[in-house]
Length: 337
Image (cartoon, rainbow, N blue to C red; front, side):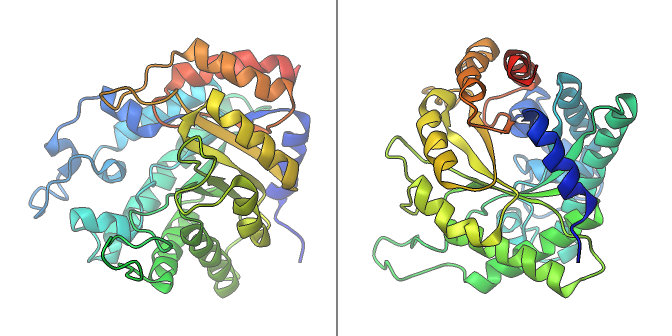
């Protein structure tokens, strides 16, 4: 069976130039200064738990905000935008008591994908020579399969591999129903969680042949300058653990700024056999948990990634805004000339 057209289309584009992902969703949401009623909307007006902070639910209750953010990133020049679904599994939504009815999690993912699809199609129509793509964001969940949450009992786990697979499979279905182009398994701090996501993706397409397979991007997170993930893997070991899934692109995001991340991207680029993506934070967090790195500074730090031909896709994670993405694109367009 031949691959869907998008595989060849993306491969062609990435061999021509560096492409650009969007930046942080949460950072821009904070600029709207939303309150509890915004997160509840009409649908969740009587919900039992507070919902403020559950950014994913805004795709249902404040779609205008999410749509505006997508369009800001597209106007800045992003080729790819991510769905507002970083916490879009029943496991993560349990924190807000939204894990009981499968329709809640389905709608979070489906409505998020629809919003991103509409924004991407709008900008593709405006500039047909620059197609825009939607990445279905699949976050790590708030549980870990490799590390015990109990100091007293290192063998204890508060979830199972199959439970995580089931949660991811439901998310993948809704994202595909919402017409994403790509599935992005991101911010991987525990590779076993990522393997559950990758297995869920394969299982979903094997069990549902009427759905067209999607390119899969995989992005790990180096938690500090030890150069390892939270579950203890180096970048090379991380690649070895996920390479069986034959990701279309692999890379690193979050935790570090561009300066600190470069050496690990270099190591990853030497051992993997697919496209490379990177989307660092806007520097390291300050004492208040915010990010101070200015767009021009971050763009300057990322310029060498392009000059040294380390990456194919570049974007931003925590603390980044449309201004950061625009500055990065302007800085790196020299490498695209």
